[in-house]
Amino acid sequence: MSTAPTPPQQVPATAPPAAPWQQPPGVYTSPIPITRTHLGHALASEWTKIKSVRSTMWTLGVFLVLVVGIGLLVAQQTGRTDYVDTPYTVPAFFGLLLGQICLITLGVLVISSEYGTGMIRTTLTASPARWRVLAAKLIIFFAVAFTVSFLAIGFVGLVTAEMHRGADAEPWLGSLFKGALYSSLTGVLSVAVGAMMRHSAGAITTMLGLVLVPSILPAFMATSSSLEPMAEVMLDYAAPNALSMLFGLNTSSDGTPQLVFLIVLTAAAVAGAFALLDRRDV
Image (cartoon, rainbow, N blue to C red; front, side, top):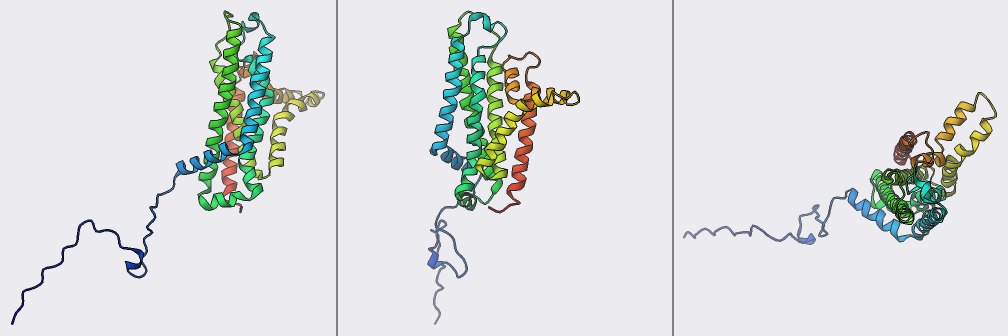
């Protein structure tokens, strides 16, 4: 007696995934959606860090007070004839001389504070790609520092222009951009130095030495005729003189060579920080 064959069971084309306990032995598929990590995730993490810590608010707040406050005080003491050969942003230069110390401090703390507290282990565990963490820190810090510097210098320039309306001043958009770029790159250099030294006090001291020593040492070197040419070059590339050139106070140069030198120095320090990051333990 023959029986009719049983038709094969139809399986839906879009069958739901099997539960973990229903899967074959040795095969496991996580029910949690998995997304491949990328630089955007690291940027979001670093942005959350930098905006949520108190050191950011304090250092940037002091920076704004110094640049805007000193700038407006200087602008109030100037007259219309003072802006015949100089841009309206010149008063902000005097505030930047002190304000850049705030950016140096914040740049070091962006990374050295995590090494000091040991939280860098958590950061690198969550993001094993170390280059991504350092790149995100550099990008976020540069964006914050440049924006704050640009707004502070621009505000001083606008108020000065309104106070001395009608003065035939130099175009000041170039000094606004270059001044903010120079200050921001100094902070990025601090991040790189902090990444290499991993110690807040040591990195801040090193950066202050890089900023202040080239302005002081030439006075001692000038006593020797053989060292005098080197002293002049060092003085030209010191941070205060470089900023004065960018703002048009020193007519010997427009500050472009000094800005290029800072870009090269910062790039070298960043390359060194990336090289050391993978070669050392946390």
